[in-house]
Every structure is written in structure tokens, then in C-alpha cells.
Amino acid sequence: MASILQKVLQEYGNKDKCKIQDPTKVEAILQKLVNDGPSKLQVITDFDFTLSRFHKDGERCDSCHGILDHSPLMPDSFREKAKALYQKYYYIELDHKMTVEEKIPHMITWYRESHNLLIEAQVSKQKIQEMVISSRALLRDSAVNVLSNLNDHKVPVLIFSAGVGNILEEVLHREKAFFPNVEVISNYMLFNETGECTSFKEPLIHMFNKNETALDSPDYFQHLKHRHNALVLGDSIGDLDMGSGIHNPGALLRVGFLNDKIDERMDSFINNFDVVLVDDQSFDFVNVVSRLVC
Ligand code: C5P
Image 1 (cartoon, rainbow, N blue to C red):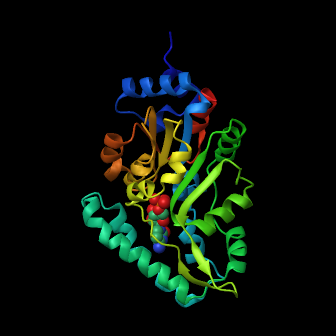
Image 2 (tube, protein in one colour):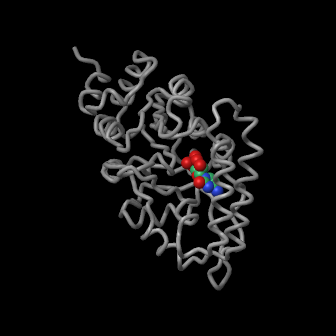
Image 3 (cartoon, rainbow, N blue to C red):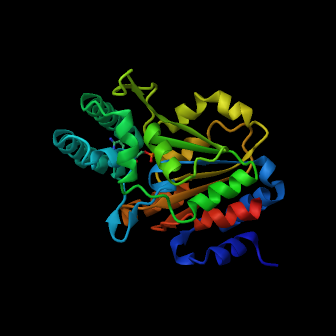
């Protein structure tokens, strides 16, 4: 009899893009996910370059920060400073020769400095929608179908992002994808009475402290304590920790989207994620799995 994994790969149809180090383990996870069904499932997904695309038609897409960093509605001086920060710190984020512990202080500096730039630029609440509409932030193909199907089956989805919550919510609204089953944990801009950003909600979430943030969000996970199974979806090693708040974890399928610096990061992704999708700009794999479970 064909295994569930074989069935998933056949329906997904993009076997070349899918790397699995331990097919036996993945088969066992899939079997439990399917046997337990939607009532035991929750989904935890990163936003930037996981739910959203990394590139389209040969051009890079925008992350939450990228929407602001590239917007003509922001002052030139802001865009230049934001670009300089990105050029310095993005390479540190992806450097496969540095440990996560070595990267963390740099990432905190990056976030603090870029939040300060946004506060200095007095980014306005009113302009966010306009910036999002004209941006290159796009959801992955079939991502809206997946969210809609999960909503139909009352499966909760947590979008766990080290981006900017106000911005990603606006992207979801634009795509009509902010379904009632979706909750967001992220960095939120706080505005004064005239609608200008004056600070960010604390504690800061960066790409490598999602474990602490998950444990700091007991209400969310307590509320879902009967849902032991999860799909955990990310594009960074730090995203592996997004499920650390789940009560008595059962079957967790950790899917990694490997978008950039593919050769350098392949080993670390394959050793850590159950399934690695290499430069796949769709949510098709997740769609197949979620339809089998629900
Ligand atoms: O892991 P997650 O996708 O939630 O992290 C947000 C992403 O936003 C990081 O991977 C980082 O590359 C990006 N970022 C950015 N500009 C900043 C801070 C983070 O593009 N100022």
C-alpha cells in the first residue's frame, strides 16, 4: 500500500524541490496528523518569506520591513539609512558560519535601530495601507486557499512574525486572508493621537527569540491545549522554536522554506526541518497536507 508521504509527494508534484532527511519519521508524523484529524491540529507559521513570497518574475518581493524601506511615501533619508542597515545585518542573519548565539546581539541592534528610524520618520498609520497596496509583498501561491480551508475546519492559525504586525495585518486584509481563525504575534507599532508611530510594543520579537516569545504567550497555547499536533512553517532556523508553547506536543511537522543562500544553508535546513522546500514560491505542499488532515 502506498504510504501517506508518497501520496503527498505525488499530489504536490514538485519532488525535486522537496528534501526529506528521514522519510520514515515524516511518514509517522503524517499518519498521526491524518489519524487525529483537524480537531487536534493547530498551524503556526512565520510571515515574511514563508506565508509571503521571496521572489516573483525574477524580482525580490518585500518583507514587512521591506514595504516601508522601499516605499516612495517614506523620506529619502529614511530609505537610505534603512538600506544601509539591511546591507549590514541581513548578511549576518544568513551567515552559515556564525552561531545563533553570535548573531543575536547583532539582530537586536538591527531591530532597535530600524525601529528608531521608523519612529524618527514619524511613519503614519494612515499611510500604511497605501504603502502596502503599492508594495511587492505577495502571499505565496495557494496560501489563501490553505488559510481558507483551515478556517472552514476551525483549525487555528498563529502567524508568528519578527516583522511588523500592523503591516502584515494590512497585507492579509488586502488579500482578504485575515480569516477569523488567524491570530498574530508580532512587533506592533504604537501610534500617538495624530496617528504617528512613537514606539513599538515590547518585548521585541526577533528571528531568534521566538522560543522565549512562545513561552511568554501562555494564554494562546493554553486555549489550544487539546491540540497537540501542529504544522510549523518557517524560513529560518529560529522558526523551529515557534511550537515551543504547544502543550504535550504530539505530531509536529516542521516545514522549512529555503529561499536564499541555498547551497550554504542546505545542510542546516535538512538537519533541522522535517521537510525542506527549496525555492518553492507556493504553499502547495502545505495545501496537500492540510487537505489530507482536514
Ligand atoms: O523570521 P521572520 O520572517 O519573522 O523575521 C522577519 C524578517 O524580517 C527577518 O528574516 C529579516 O530578514 C527581516 N528584517 C528586515 N528588516 C529589518 C528587520 C528584519 O528586512 N529591519
